[in-house]
Every structure is written in structure tokens, then in C-alpha cells.
Length: 287
Image: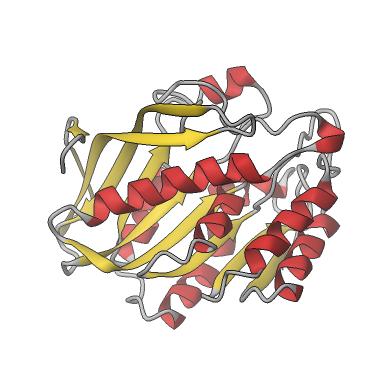
């Protein structure tokens, strides 16, 4: 893969009979912000695989969320979602977790800035995030042992909406998308449950619905402190009304803030996601 910088290999052994391999690569990307400024730089992508899985293996891209301030975005470090990544590897995937432009070890400007709260311009930020998700997909698909014809896009929070944005590109071989608590404009510190410009977010999801014909799974919790209980349902309804293919699941309250269900309550979502992946034709969860 020309232009890709491969970094250290780490080995961990979650099962006695298998080895979970963790590698990193530096991936050149080119993205554009809402002001039309082009940014060219490299981002860090963490890749998980298991030598016990059948190969060529399908690829799953897992997209991280967005902190409410610059300090939080810088503090992300290197996105890994180790436990969730291991779960997806046990379903047979090679998992790629990109750390996007403007975050942690990748650094760079905030290309996802969408303006003032009451007049958010969401499409460009999600477009830039989707560009990076699909660049990571293309890079990992080119790896030895990866199946170039089967992939799933997944994400949490901002990354969940990114998964739907990427699905709307109709990239060949992408057969499904999973949106964990997806959306934008939320801030539980200052306006809990009332995200910025929620109607514009609904319009964005409707625009994706016109292009998303693959199965998608949307997972939220009733006590989401970023988006509340009602806005996610309205966003999904807008997506479906525009022609989008999807299934919506809203969990009962999870802890103090259901927005963190993905990382803090895997016991809630893993059975639902396993069923979805099996309906897409992927293997059952391996012990």
C-alpha cells in the first residue's frame, strides 16, 4: 500500500486458542470543511484482526464520537474501542478504527466544525468524517487477508451519524451500517437532551435516506443526555420517510447517561448487533 506508514504490532491473547493482533497505520487523507478549505494530512488507523478467523475476512470500520470542546477532542489520544473491536473480531471481521482529523494523535484543524448552535451546517462535517471512514476501509481492504467485497460501517455518536453518511455513498461491498446514538450538536453540560439545530440534523438524515438501501441498525437509549428520547426517533422517521432502510431500537435507561451505552453497557447492545450481523450473513459470535 503506497503512502501508508505501518507502526508497531501488539499481541494480546483474549482466548487461549487465538491471538488478537493490533496494528497501526498512518493513512493520508484529503478532506474539506464547511468553509471549503481543503486539508491534506495523515490520520492514525488502529487495526484489529485474529489469526484464528477464516480469511479473507470482511472489514468493519468503527468510527468514534466528538467531544464537546477542543480539549476533549485533543485528549482522545488514539481511538481503539478495544472491547467493542474484540467483539466484532469475534464475529469474523478485521476492524479498523480511524482517529479522524482534529482528534488525538492525528491532530490537525477541526474540519467537523458546523457553526453556531442555532444554525448548524452539518453536511460538510459528516462528509469529511465519511471520507475518512471510507479511506480507512479502502486501505484495510488492500491488506493481505482482507475480503474486498464485504464490509460494514459502524460508529458511536458523531461516528454513528458518520456510519449512515458513509452508507449513503453506496460503496460497493458495504452491506450494512450500525448507528450507535448517532447525531450532532449535543451537550449534556449546557443543554441536556436538546441538541443544536435538531431540525437540520433531521434534514441531513433524510438526505441520507434517499440513498441508503442497505440494512441499517439504529441504537439509542431513552436517557441519552445528548439527544434526548424523542429527537432520535424523529431523525429515524425522517430517514425512513425519505426511503432509507433501517431498524430502530431504543433501550431503556442505561446508567446516568444512555449516550454511553456503546462503551458502558455492551450487555444491552451485543445480542441485538449479533442478530443483525447474522441476518447480513456474517458468522455467529465465536467463543
